Length: 427
Image: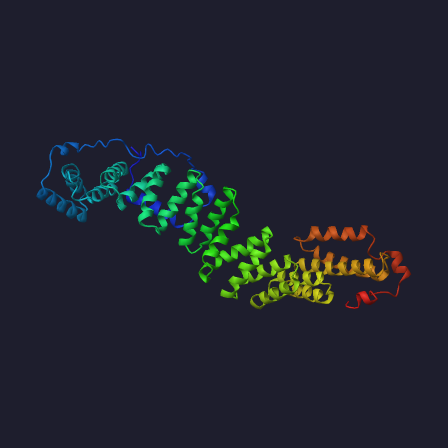
């Protein structure tokens, strides 16, 4: 018997069917992986049944019509014993196979009476006898999948999809069957699932995992999806492309997709931020600032954005603007150490540039005072456990490099409390 325990076939099929309404992680599927591709056992050579004695009697056309009417009527009434009785009489007595659907109803009778093994046998008999039948392939696919014969399930699923090419449940089961057999065709099948689910994030995630499994770039899946359907409904693909473009350093591709997407959804905060970061990676600072500031129109509480703008102004040597945005970040979150790290970097960069470009490496009390300002900001940042390690390391470096005022410096310059000179006029 295919199943040792007797349980409701209806519940079995329903549960299996519902299990394909969402994407599974690769780990879940790998636990039961079966790499067998042998299809030789998918269809038996013969079909022995207890009803074979009916084969001795050939029914007349009139008898066939009457018995088939019985089968239909008892099917509606769910009198499964009668369906089996007259169904088998037709299977063996209707030599010309006047009513092909008798196999459908006979399969129902075993399906609904908890006999999946016999239901599968009826499906196999019917498919061999009359050719394609949707219901027979449907039952056979689910039963074969449930008992772990994924290669057999694949045969029936592909047959179903030739007739119903957009049936999501069949595509999902096919994907899982192919994964369990470790077939790379799972990628194409999952691409279809992503298409049919309008780029559902869970399905996209599984597709990305499949790309990685077979040594492909997961980003390609989202790029293909966007190129095939650059629409508002497919905005999630664009979001994925811009996010992964940052991770993989594909600035131009990420910007192309991101800017296309923003024409369709100008207020998409995630893509706006990604575009800003991509411009930053390309060192196109003016464009980067433009999109970071655009982001703040939709979310003015995100200190990371203020800090990013401050960092860019620091790179542009616009020290005053950098300090403004670092302080804005502090005002948004007074407990975070990040804005203090950012402002400290501004002071340190300014002091270093002045030391190397204006004073030819000769340190002055004014330069040391700016380094001290950086040190003080690092000290404030160290109060935040999340930034304590970084801040303490930078404090230690400033002290060991003797860049902050010593006791001797303070003794020799008692009246110099603030940094002087053109370099530090902005302070």
